Structures are given as C-alpha cells and as structure tokens.
Length: 450
Image 1: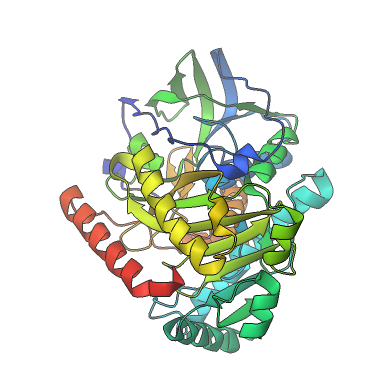
Image 2 (image 1 turned 45 degrees about the vertical axis):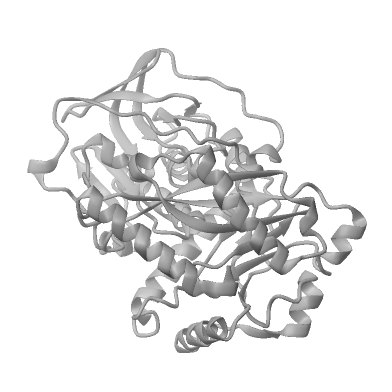
C-alpha cells in the first residue's frame, strides 16, 4: 500500500500531541514495577525510528532488531508503555474474532481464513516472547467464551457457530448451569467456547517485552514527537528536548498516524471504557465462580466484556465518539455508572463493593473498515487501524511491517497488502452525529447483553 504522491507528507510539519488520558489503566496500576523512564534528549541518529510503543510498535521494534542486529533502532512513545492505548484493552489475544452484525461474516470464508492466518502468526510471535524471552504476562491459553444473556444474543451465537462450521473450527456449547458454576452468575443463559484465544495481562506484557528487546533497540518513553520532516535521504523529528534523525521510520501510532500527514481525515476515534474491582476476598471469590480466570466476550458487540483475573473482576462496555481523540474524566465517570449497572446484573451480591478504578482506551476505526499497512512514502512504513482485535493483529502487523521495511516477504505481508486502505471519513459534524446515533442505537438494542 502506498499513498498518492500528491498526498505524501512534505516539508516540516507541526504534530499535535496525543491527548492525555484522564485516568490510569487498572491493568497498568497492577502490572508491577515501572520501566526506567528515559525520555529522548539531545541529538539521536538511528537506522530506523519506530513511533508508538503499543502492540504494533513494540513488535516492529523487536522484529527489526532481531533481523538487523547491526542496525540501530529507536522506539519512542508519547506516554508510558503499558498505560497507552494498547495497555488499556481487555487482554484477549484472539485468533478469530466474530462480528455477528457483519453481513458477510459467514459468506466471506476467505477473508476469515486470512484473518485467522494473520492472527495466528501474531499469537505465535506473542508466545515466542513468553517462551523464549521470558516475558511474564499471566499467559492463559484457555480460549474465550462468547456469552449470551438474551434470546437475540443466542441467535448471534448460532450465526457465529455456522461460520465456524464452514471453516472447520471446533467449539463447544455451554449451557446455563455450567455458565453459572463457572462464573458464579445466573445472568447468562448460554455460551459458545472457542479455543485458540490467549488471555494476558496487557500492560504487564507490554512493559516486560520492552525490558527484553534486542540490544540494538533503544526505548524512550514520555517522548512526544512535535515536528516531522520526511525526506528521500532521511527523516528528522523534533521532540521536547531533542531531535531524532532516522534513515527509515515506521509509524505505529494508531489513528495519530493521520497527524503525520498520512491518510488524512480517515480516522474515526472511539473510546471504550473499563472498570476494575479491588482484590476480592476468598469468600467473594467463591461467589464469583469456580474458575480462577475467564474471559467472556458478549454475543452482541455492544454488550459487556468481562474478565476475571488477578483475583479481580474487570468489566468493559460503552463506546464514545472522541472528537480530536479527547476524553474527559466526566466521560469516564458516566461509563463507570453504566458498568455498575452491568456489575449488578451479573453479581448483585458483589456489586456493593463498587470499582477501584475506571479508565478509557482509544479504538481507531475507518468508515469502510480499512487498514493501513505498507510503505507509505520513501522509507516511511506504517501499520494502523486494527478496527479491533488489536493484540493479535497488532503483533502480526508490527512484525510484518518491520520485515517489509527490511525488504522481506511473507504470506502475512501478502495478506496485509491486499487489505483495503481506510477511506475518508465524512466531515466531522456528520461523522460525529452519525457515530453517536449508531452507537446509542446499538447500545439500546444490546439490552441485557450490556
């Protein structure tokens, strides 16, 4: 994928800084010792600069460092690794996602196979970090439970099962009694267990991977790129306290990629929200089911995602359009109130404890579901717009874009090169009104799945 030369970034550009999240992620707060904070200072020269240290950027830096051990790699993030958008997800490394609202989910078997192949490649790269590099992340390959609390939720699961049948995928139906025993909740009436997904502590994984990157990779957190100048024989980036000169650049900045003059006006920034309880007592844990850990995906994509991990309960729901990528503390508080509704529906005898903390996380979409991958300009590479399933896709995209930057090929690169690029969003007032209308309607339709 290459952008139109007429749209390629030119000259020195001012880069608006990323928005600051109003609260820390619960995953980050429970992820252990912080990384040593080393912002970039002075003049730095490198063979490749990777901008953004989330799922894509960390794995791009790792792969580039592995394949080119004599090249210098600099990885920068505007915030703290693990507390960025990637560390705010629910920690599902999903091999095959499901979206029952997508009309071609069953018919588009080749698309599903391509997604499965790509995500499996990403999961294998995640696994190699755990097994070969010793990355501690509470790795748990138990799979995911697609869970329904309503008849229309069960109908969504039946549609998903037909797609799995067409792909030759194994799964198992879970009935109400087994769900109640597993979770301690009588809220769910049926579920579909699909193996292959890995549950992880996302912030812990990201931080601990950053500790064991190849020796030729230098990491700078709290390093905001304030200006950019792309050139055919090198690129120059200014930070708050220095400058970075790079022969190549890999942009892994999610929707903020558009602020670098690339795929302008394509990003639709949404935030989703999550809350975490305090650690449950032994008696409370007994009322939260027989499984020490589980991950529940809602049958309706606007329902509530649930994790039990670290002797805590995590709940995520609510999508909010975020113009200019900005969310306020009031937005988080409003979502927290809805998560309390979901908590009481599932565990009325536990919900009195409330939540210890709540947070938001960025999810960038494109109007047409398109993705960014490839060489975007001379010696400028990028990967962005996962449109969900960010852990597995992010690892695969990051690994593949580093290989591409080094002139390599792979089946995953071939798949990603075939992806449709993001289309321009409608003008902001129309996009904002449309997204708010659709998300509100879908949230109401989800009903008790929330």
